[in-house]
Image (cartoon, rainbow, N blue to C red; front, top):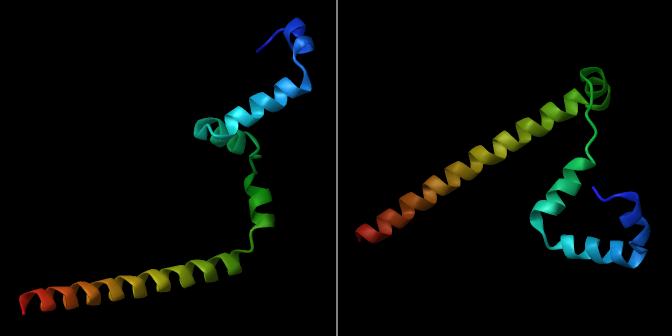
Length: 85
């Protein structure tokens, strides 16, 4: 970290410039994102998460992925049949 003398010399324009330069830096962006995360206790998660809705969404996503897998398998079979002709 910088010392107090250095922080006093930095202007807000310098801080904005530094921030804008880091916007393109993926690692800095990811670090800023994760630094904003707050840890939740098990009790808080239990209170916040609607378990019934979560289970419904998971079942829905499983059904979607199974259907997608079937479609891809059918597509592969059709392509292979066309290539064999």
